[in-house]
Length: 307
Image 1: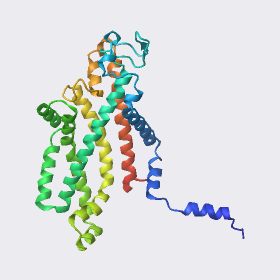
Image 2: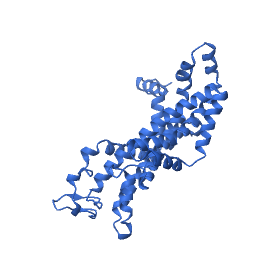
Image 3: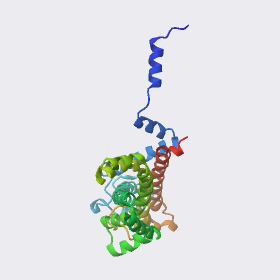
């Protein structure tokens, strides 16, 4: 018989020690190299957006810092005062790298704010419909079905035509577009949880509806809502860029990736591709990185999709 050494016993104990849910979640998430790369890219984009005023070579929306003589300089060119524009300049002499940093700041802010507010409204409506059922469920879901029958961009265009331009206006339009997706997802998940024994046990204990919904029902509905939220943040960023490109989103005085793409669109045929190309790449990288993270979250949080 072989003697059992303390080292072997310690290693066996560590191996047998169960992982906490958080550690298991982190381990499962980082199993995918693609999702890890997406998370790293999104973290970089978020860092750039948060600290844009500190790391940008210039403030592209400070008129005192712009010179029309520096307009449409090629990438790598230098201005009269010796400043190097790594990504070139637009027709107003703005440094494209700085403009992209500020545009990411605005686009992410609008997308996250609109999606978070839409999630709060949609979750409240979905939980109300699933928990109380009956006429309440029918009324809420008919409104959801009616809204989802129209294209999102059409609803946003109509609202912005009435409300006008502005950051607050486009946030309101995006909230009105997205809350129905959260409501349908929350209701579907809550209906499944509503029929389970722990909800019936909580009701038999005569707990208040508020406690049953927020203490027992809502936490078990969060995983699919988190996945939907990542997808809809990317959708909100893309929709804001589309509306700004069409001239109905943010005003021209506000930094936005959609406005930057629109500003350079008229110069594409003349060979000045960088004015639209680099903001388009920044928009594409941001949306793809968020979607990669969302796909991996869907696989990790849904046991049926785990390998």
